[in-house]
Length: 122
Image: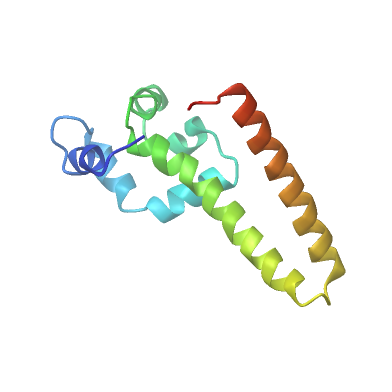
């Protein structure tokens, strides 16, 4: 898990971050949206005009803010969609949204149960 201290060290460029990192860090919202749209790290590197191999190197480092925000993007999108479905389904008037919400809940429950079985940690 990325600690706030590690993110601060990256963002303050204390020996970790390359020069192009500062430019990307000014656009985390845009970066996260690209990740939510299923763009690969290589695609995002090209989008921000960063050498792909260099970007992927820093992306794969432990406690990388690039990886953190890449994972955060789809999570935020999924949460926003879920909250929207919940709001629309809660009235009972939108049957399709209620069905989508039920399906999404079942999928999430299944994934959580599978993760608990495979990766159970007391």
